[in-house]
Length: 170
Ligand SMILES: [Zn+2]
Ligand SMILES: [Zn+2]
Image (cartoon, rainbow, N blue to C red):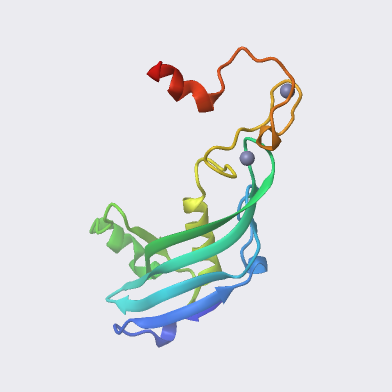
């Protein structure tokens, strides 16, 4: 899904796109997109810069790093990216207009690939802890039973984390 840059003006041009999972390559081994990714926002030309801001929303499946069960997750990200055309790139960099939160990137084409933007934004937003739920109990280290489905019969010396808080109260 590409946006043609030749038609842009300083007036923000709204866009609302669906990008198919097959248009987003090399996303991440941890995620499998389960639906079209929505990318909506505005794009405009501001001097030598092309400014794009908006929101990416993606639905995906991942597998829990504690219990290994698949689980769905939704990733949303607000983003603002700035592109400059190659002939202006070095002069823009010299001006040090790169704000802390802004990416200045280079356009190599007369088009901007929204699939590429969606991919970058999704990767930035992949949660650090990929777990099916906050209180996922994971697998028993000995018998590998999924403890979310009930206790196994292994003996453990460790206090069940659900009771650890209670112990402090006693
Ligand atoms: Zn889990
Ligand atoms: Zn066990």
